[in-house]
Amino acid sequence: MVQFAVKAPVARTGVALVVALSLAACGGSPTQKGAGSGEDRDPYAAVLGQLKGLEGNARTQKLLELARKEDKLNVYTSNTDLADQAKKFTEKYGIQVSVYRAKANQVLQRLLQETKARRSSADLYDSNAEELATANTEGLLRPYEGPADDGLVPAAKQKGWVGSRLNMFTVSWNTKVVKEPPKSFEDLADKRFAGVTIMESRAFEWYMALSQYFVGKGKTQAQVDDLFRRIAANSTSVEGNTTHAQFLGSGEHGLSTSVYNHLVDQLIETGAPLSRTPVVEPLVIRPNGVALLRNAKNPASALLFMEWVLGDGQQLMIGEHRIPARADLQKGALDGVETVTVDIDKLVAEGEQWEARYEDILRSARSAK
Image 1 (cartoon, helix red, strand yellow):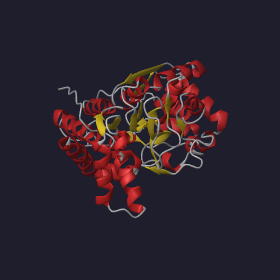
Image 2 (cartoon, rainbow, N blue to C red; image 1 turned 180 degrees about the vertical axis):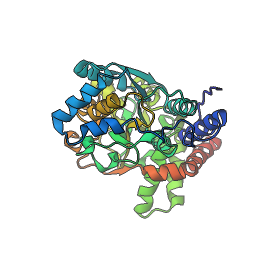
Image 3 (cartoon, rainbow, N blue to C red; image 1 turned 90 degrees about the vertical axis):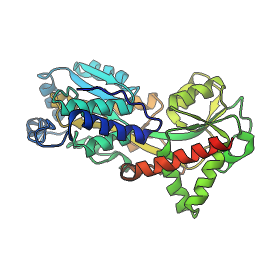
Image 4 (cartoon, rainbow, N blue to C red; image 1 turned 120 degrees about the horizontal axis):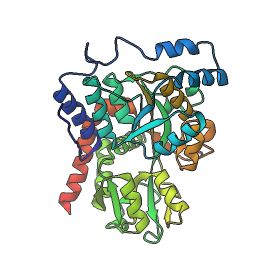
């Protein structure tokens, strides 16, 4: 099989190309009859049958008993924190975990190709919302059945997968560079931020969510786009949330229009002169999460790990400055703050349109400079 390394300028293009190139290389969809998608078998059925009627610790112990009869658990992820979480899981249960990590579009590409070629080794998939939703559309995921999604916020309960954490896009700045921080998105268009601002080149889902919010508040889409063009005119386009955080920490750039809160908070903890408060509202929230893979060779281990991530593993996310999907562990992280959640169904159905609009905004701002 031909292998492709796809690196797209924006997220949706990456997902679309991953699917198209993977199917072209392998011939057809992974969900077609005889393609090895697992439609004719369910590796979880026997496991779930043995768990029937069990609750709490009794269920967990039975899962552990079954998992110990399996091979090493294989997890595919784009999550930078998952390797550390896997170590904690192994320390608790003694189940070995192999973690393959790459950029989200590359992980999805690998899953699609391996599934089609009948050589998939992954049991569990942890990634961004759009890639998870695309994997579900392509028939790679097996919906979770169990008690671990009790107590999760509504945004965590998605089709085919479960949100384990909430990524929060925040306006953030270096306090040594930006003395008078913005108070609103309108402020970001002020010329005092020209030359010090960076704007994520792939954040069209952020733009989509904010567009829905502002239109709901009475703006027209044309007015929203004009606001974003004026913000873009002040900004340098930079790809990657980690890069945004690093640039802010070093002072190379002074302000980011959208960067993950946990990256900023981690740097603040080390003493970096960064801030994201007072909050520029609304904050955009996107669930990222975990899913069982339909072709899992180690289904008991996959279930055990997933339930641990949605249970005990949620506490670890607080230490990583992430927002857990469990409402009782959010500890007021979103209290008193206006938020808007990315509509995942809309993102999948209309993503290419929103991507094109966002890229046009960035392109027009660049050409005007």
